[in-house]
Amino acid sequence: MISNVINLLSILTMIGQAIIVFLLVVVLVALVKKGSMRTLIDYIGKNAITCALVVAIIATAGSLFLSEVAHFVPCRLCWFQRIFMYPQVVIYAIALWKKERFVSWVQGMALSIIGAVFASYHYYIQMFAKTVKPCSTYDPVSCTEKVVIHYGYITIPLMALTAFLMIILYLVVGKIREKRAQTVQTAQ
Image 1 (cartoon, rainbow, N blue to C red):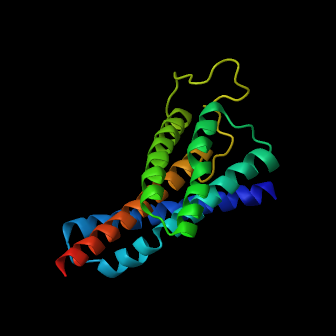
Image 2 (cartoon, rainbow, N blue to C red):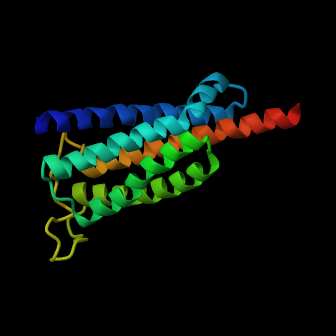
Image 3 (cartoon, one colour):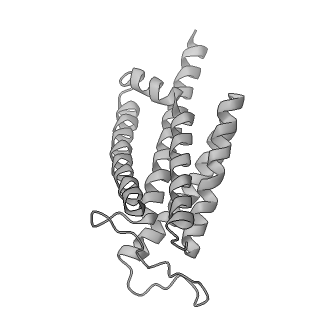
């Protein structure tokens, strides 16, 4: 069962990476060509908070599964990534409930950017750094240990980084839609 869930999380990570590429293309085309992609941006932007909530729930559930069911002890950097992911479930759920977008955008963007920095650094030291020792000798798990490695590159920090980047891009598309709606309103 544990290996099945880890395989599922790895596949979801690859799907998330495809979504990131897709969203980057949408954003870049929207920035270059003002009128293009309007329908797609409207659809994604209208559902941005919902999409961000789904990503945050999956990331939080996956992280809890890995520590509580699979018994992988999180390292120090994993804890920092959790600190910046877990509150986003509550933020986006409240934003949807209250139909409030601005606060969730500011808070979600701040948490996701900081979380992405930690996840990027963690992934870097796991995959490439040979001399960096970020954890103290008192930590039960080394931050450089690759507890999960799938398809030759997917580790737990990369799963987190993918989730943070997806949330950032969903929020950006939501903001682009909001700006376009304001521009149309003021033009009328």
